[in-house]
Image (cartoon, rainbow, N blue to C red):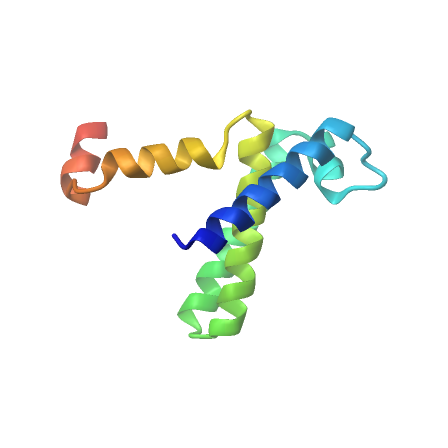
Length: 109
């Protein structure tokens, strides 16, 4: 990941954390989504994932970039709502680095 991407995710994570902490659903999309509960956040994440898949299959790169951004945004909300961070995701990816995907998947089974 580029340094810029890491900084972008860090800023996004901080903004989401602040908006969740403020809990002002009428003023913040993040807070309003969180107020609807984890299930609604997860549902929105799933919708964004499907939209990203559709954009990828249709070979529409600008749409895929937009949908991937929406996907990362909503995943960030879900992670924050669960008290998890992008650092935890990075640590898990680092742990898996150098391990065959087949081997890693078999170890989880």
